Length: 81
Image (cartoon, rainbow, N blue to C red; front, side, top):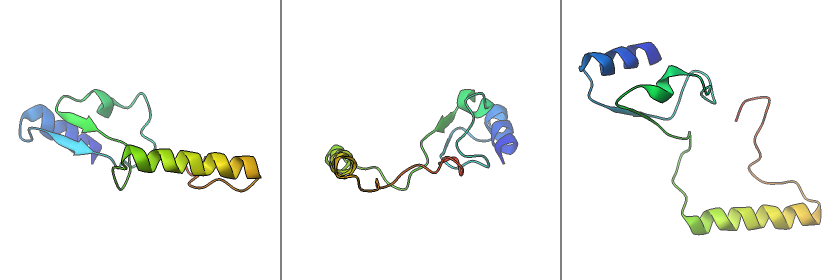
């Protein structure tokens, strides 16, 4: 898929694309998709959270950390996200 997308953008058949899901997550820093003209790479997320929601999540995890409770929404390093 990534090579087909790069070719379609390079040939002009496709004017632009926005992509947030890749065969390898997270997308490696040296992947050429980061620099493909006409391609916008966004974080892999299901929603755009408001600043208030983000602050509440951070505060909740800070409270949990201080109380010795498990943190919410932790990254699973073994899975890469």
